[in-house]
Image (cartoon, rainbow, N blue to C red; front, side):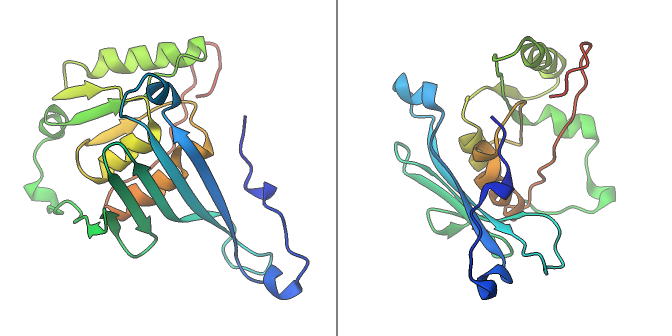
Length: 202
């Protein structure tokens, strides 16, 4: 199903209406299939989204805080917008920024990258897109992984265990916490839109 930020209940108090409202997006078990199989790659995630008031200058919701907790591994990755990213209350340092002339060639960066690929099989179109991505990347990267838990994958990107993660057909509760966590760790989060041969958008 789709997730709408407008589903948050509004307050009858006019003073509260003028303030940003917070929407908590909770996924009690992300990686349900892993959890059911006894695999330790699952997590609980909570993303906090600021919903701007009608008088706010901000026109769109923004994820302002997030927590991803893997109880089996004892890892809690958390972030608050503008305050950095933490693993078990220890601040994660963003990767060192290099000047443009110091950067290695892009092929070299890709060659050294460990990338997690989402492999949703709910639709034929996403299965084909995932398969094409795996085929295109397999021989060009250090390694591919498929942990089948979006929030855990994003936490590991923030911790620099993965260099990148991409997937299709994710819901708001899959990525809300991870968005701010990755960004506060110095990473980039973007939405990709892919039109397949059937005109489907992923």
